[in-house]
Length: 261
Image (cartoon, rainbow, N blue to C red):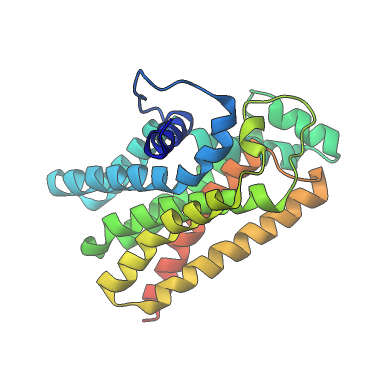
């Protein structure tokens, strides 16, 4: 298999695993590719963010800003099948209702949605909506910020895979992803994760936006330490929660930054 063909395999593996978008029929599923495919997880964020931005632009032209923001959120959830939102909800339930490692892991594995998950999803989606509505006030920046937020927030879980051990002892859907991939995977993910932000820095001429990398890095470290303390590592749900919290943290950072510059 050629290098280019192998990289296409990894890209479409990431696309198939992290979104609801169809993969080519020639793609052969190989569990070992899931770990390597994390190199393209931030690039998947490009696709989700750009699609959400395009829907926002069209809806904003046809309706108004609030409806446009809501439509962009809906399409991003549809594209990913609420993959990361589901992880965030499970973490809310697990860490909200469990007081031991075993109980937390048991609750997170339960498919039922509890009070903590419901409240957590309502609050984080409401906050995301309010922040995006504020960012939409600068129409020329909205699409770039969506791409940057989705890409950078998907880079942070890749760091966690290298930082922490996998917490579960049994097989799960995320177990192949949890295997630490070669270093080139992290380098590729970093490149895909930060490139949109650099583009926005050049476009807006706001070097301060680069501080968003540090903010999300700090959020990731704090969440990682919390997961390490309670369950000794991370699970796939933890990775989803980190993506969701980091995406909202990025938009929060941008809104606060623009308020003072």
